[in-house]
Amino acid sequence: MNAPHLAPGAGERRLGPRAVIRVRGSLTRRLALLVGLWVAIGLGVTGWFVVRVAESRIEAEADARMVSLLDAIVAAASLDPVRGPYLSRPVSEPEFDRPLSGHYWQMTTEAGLVTTSRSLWDQRLPAPRQDAEPRNEDILGPRDEPLRLVERHIQLETRRPTPLRQRVTVQVAVTRLPTDQEITRLQRGLILAFMGLGTGVVAAVGILVVWALSPLRRAQQEIAEVREGLRDHVDLTAPREIAPLVHEIEALIDQNRATLERARTHVGNLAHALKTPIAVLRNALERGEVPVARAQAATLERLVQHHLRHARAGALAGAAGVEASPTAAAQTLATALRRLFASKGVEILVLGRETARTRADPQDLTEMLGNLMENACKWASSRVECRVRGGGPGHILIEVEDDGPGLAEGQDAAALVRGVRLDEAAPGSGLGLAIVSDLATLYDGTLALERGQKLGGLLAKLVLPGRFLS
Image (cartoon, rainbow, N blue to C red):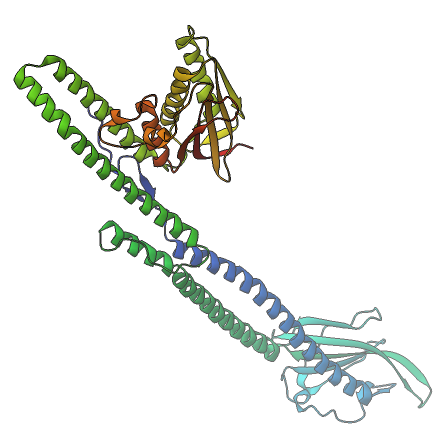
């Protein structure tokens, strides 16, 4: 039963049967929103602080002006035993003489005598406090308008008809309207200024983000052109932050192109290799030569299997995450070969670190080691060693050595020849060595044959990309 086809969900783009890209919104919009939120918070806190400082400064200046008026009234104040306190000379502030002007003064003695400015008319300021501390506070005036009050206690004395000294409380009240208007203008100006600054910063960040992400858009366009066949490679000068991504994409393109070329090569080799056996098989069938037909059918089967293995290895070569343990594979093979060659009494030893990992498909690694170790067991007198160790930076060296006769002079090259007629290898080399050499090449590795220095027989050196686990 076929599985139902499910359409990709919202925000998903399906590229194949397994590949799904989930889209999580615009990166530009996300960065703009985050920057806008941060700028709003930062400018809001900064604006509140600036406004508070400016308000305090404006109010302090207004209080300073009121203290100056209070000092002028105190300097002109005199005391009459009967009438109470009065101004001995005019104060240079005409608003004190205009009724309900918003500028008022009032003097009150301990006996309750009160003298006020003409601007208060028939109204009074709040009664003074009894403590000796001066005060600055906000009050409501005669017309319920907001006033700022400054109060101070002074000592006045009179010498006629008898010396008299009394405490007099002097109060000055001035409307808060000009101060409040100035603070309001300041708040509006700062709000507009910070809003303009914030909008400019967010817009600038948005433009910078769009400009900074332009290499990604160019990379996407060039990758699309590569996919459509309009260009061969991604030709892009990328910033340092996205250069590794572009390099990995370029490497993936090269890997896919190499895989395709290997597949074409395998198909061509298979087609070329099948020509002669098919022709021989046809002639044998026409002549009724059954043994020859069977031999050619076996040859065809070996050729097909050989090229299928190559095609599979070529597709897996360089695939991400494909690793295998050569030590574990060798130990498994050694157990099987001990049973197979039990009658011969061959001792098989596996030496090396179990943390070694090769970048190869486990089945291909088993096939390479199996061919090498089986060939060594066939020609060994009594001992075969498989050694796993480091083969240089980023590589693993696998040595398979036996104590047999080894190869004759000049036969090592012939044993590794990759040709159409695979049975043309020199005697004793077998088909397996050519397969190992081909598989090693597909994984960017090498296979070398030489005479062993330890056991004296054939020494096969297989180098594959790999590493040691920490």
